Length: 375
Length: 221
Image (cartoon, rainbow over all chains, first blue to last red; front, side):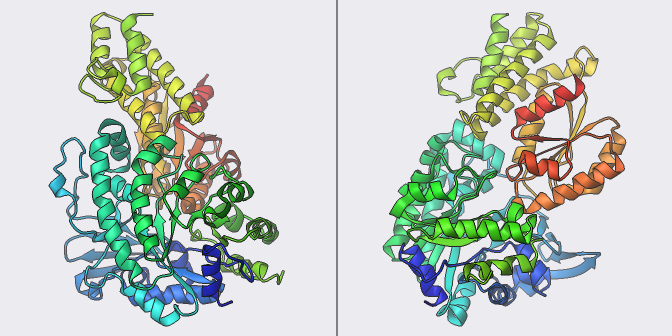
């Protein structure tokens, strides 16, 4: 089996010659492992995609997840100045925004015009975005999607390595766009105070995200990941999950599945009380499945409960096992996951959350050796 | 206990902020924490009696949160209702008729821009009678150290949402303990556990805001 076929078979819940291995990278980890300036890794499509390829080669993963897309080829025209101060780089853009780039983490934006967050009680629905031109990467951090070069990062990777490796695109859940729009705190309270308005906003984003997803399918991606980190019980109740997340992610999942492309959800933390509901959306699988203490479902139990409804991509603890664990800890932990995961197929070995920035390269390289029984 | 004070407790537990608040449905159109606190003060009910009711109500909602019977939105609503009460009680704190229990410095650690957990803890701790010094998000260790230096005998809370920033939290705890070994540091956040808190040298771990309050209150008991 080629790596691409291996991942595909796992997503189709078919037998694989060995467990597919494919972790997702944090930007911090990429920065610490490749010799690319942080500004370029963030803005430059080629720097980003080449880094993904380089890291795949280093770790011998079976696929690549492309977490950012829509890079502006003329990004350098927007940069007024760039200064290195100790270990950080401070960049000023023509619009007055200042960006601080650490050597091991996501950039931090100091916006010149600070946009006030929307208020659910005072909002005018006509102010909602008409096009999806940003990815809400983190709190106060958007990655702009250039509408003319929306999927170049994805098509480039597909044309260079897509025949051999599984290439996955990424979209963000309507619930994340919603929380980003109002602010996490006010957004969560809005669910209680103005549920109908919240549903309207979620529905609005769902239409935009569905359109983006269907366009992404046309690039030839093997799968699409829905980033939905706030849909777990660390944040909302099962009832609110069913009301404010499930219907909207279902709409996206069904559209993508109709195109024959796999789609899976990444929800962080505890999901034990909604594991079956996640699959009610029609997704092909889940990514993450955080093990305890962050999560509350063991892999064995999850496999039993999910059965043939979909695949699991996870569930190595990036911090407690890979960052803080010894080589022996890692071997024991990963071998155990492979033993449980390989039963009846439908398992892709990866970190639950992204690989933490400080995890040593040698520790990630161990994963391939364990999968290939070379340890 | 006085009926108005009891009703304040119900409003906090249920997250009923004021009369115009549409949440919760079963209290729609009724007075909320805002109006009831004013009424209680007009009835000359002692401010510390009102505060005790708030603490008890937050304890109840905190316990429910710990048992997964309510989730973050409900807790936020309760904290919002309690903050409304605190606005009315603030003059009594300032006049010294209610004493604060101590100072609590809190911030989200370096590299982490998330504030929801930190804010929840801030609100609940403040509502429990502590003076909270909120340093914000992405707080570098030096900022924590300066705040400790400016506020001797304060307690410190570190928050993180991202798994990836746990390493930064550990180094902040280490540096605080090196510089101010007697300072009590409590940590909390989604990726943490009792065990990871111990490993990084923190004095305590709070799985939820109420645990933070209980921990702090134990320290001054």
